[in-house]
Length: 269
Image (cartoon, rainbow, N blue to C red):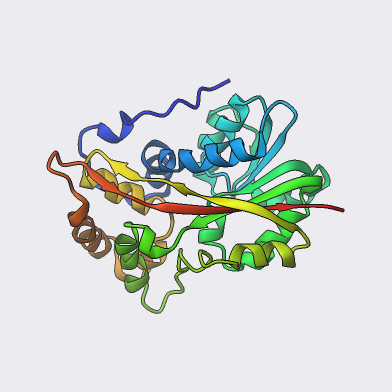
């Protein structure tokens, strides 16, 4: 089994220009950004006692670090990911990750005891439809986990994410904080036929070796894609660098305190 050990060494490599291609974005997610959410993944697995008796399905699992962490706890894991580059990175970690659009029906027939939606809600055009589809993949007695950003006033990255909203212009851009208000995630679970069963808030600091790594990491989230399409890569990068400036430390590293929120829904019948 591939190890899920995460270190900062990949983010500390020598500076290179910010690249625009999907392969480089996928690599930046896997090597820089994905590790920022490890506290969230671990908190959820601790709460649900994920272990050898658990079957975990990750929806929108990206390059698969969350699944690796579940596998290291003994769980049986599988994932769905629509992005080809991210999916190939996950498969390179010897994970069973399939293309979401082509496998949804077959995966639905083999339900899981835990289904996670860690990142997908932030960019989903229809969160309600996504959660309803996810709920169908949960075994009776199983749980669906939804996660999103916490309140913007508790997330220092909100000042940076504002660039994505402002520069998207007429291009539809999803507000990453839209589902963070109290009751919003619970309402999605209820509408999907699940019973809300609590949740939690988790501190997930975003820490980077330098501003260049921070720019690459933030761009890899996909939240800036509409802004890049509307305003161009160069302008978005320039404004990202300016927005990150207050969070640069004396040693040149970048750190932003953030709070993420998750809720658990149970399938009772």
